[in-house]
Amino acid sequence: MSKNNLEVGMRCIKYMLLCVTAIFVLTSALIISVGTTIYAIYYDVSFFLDYQLFSPATFIIAIGVIMLFVSLFGCIGALKESTCLVNIFAVILSLVLVLEIAAAITAYTLRSQVSGMLDSNLRETLPYYYSNPEVTDSFDFIQSRLNCCGIDSYLDWGEVKANRTGIDVKNVTVPYSCCAQTSYQEIGEVQYEECVKLYANGCLPRITYLIYQSAGLLGAGAMTIAFIQVIGIVFSFSLASSIRKTKSERERRRWEIQERMINAYTSLNPNEEKQKPIVYVPFHGQTTA
Image (cartoon, rainbow, N blue to C red; front, top):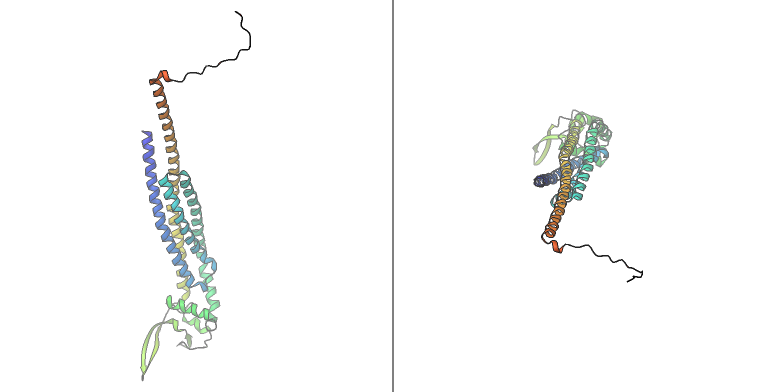
């Protein structure tokens, strides 16, 4: 009865571990997708970001790749009932769990530094808009994609000395990327494009919100995967313990069956039991009649 209970319990844990590893495969693919998406977002505005902000996204991608390979140990170990593979799966999963917690803490810590860092970088690079092509492309990108103009508002462009044409608004020349709505006018046979509406909001609040939310998403994703991993670690160690107990029980029952077979054979054939060998002791003396 105890053997049946042990077998049933191990089978249940095995199937549950297989389900958890299948969830790991899906969540690993999801976390890699999230990590690469956020990395792409950071890369688009990388000119205004410090390199340290890329570390949580890179960390999450690496963790997702590791989890894909680690899941193989869990699946093979559960199917083969290998204590070694299941223990390796649990140990590596524990190490990855520590890395995920570190990534989540790093993401939340860096999130508080985003606003000041972006404010400083944007104000330092804005005066070089017309002289540095990289600055030009970066500001045009964030203004057109985030629907914003300037740092706090379009008035920030009044402090930048323009050396080429742009949009004149109240004696302030702003880049064409600040235009929110245009209209076409025809003068003779020539058609002109005219900006009739500018983006009202500055870029600093929008880009700060974007990075802030991305870092929060990274941290939340890492903690969600960590919760699933805790379940997987518990199931892995439980399965390893059940496999050891089941193998010990099988060996004990095999030994008992062998003993019973030997005892049954000798009791049915008492004449064929092994007799003690006769030992002859050499005698070197002399006998008398």
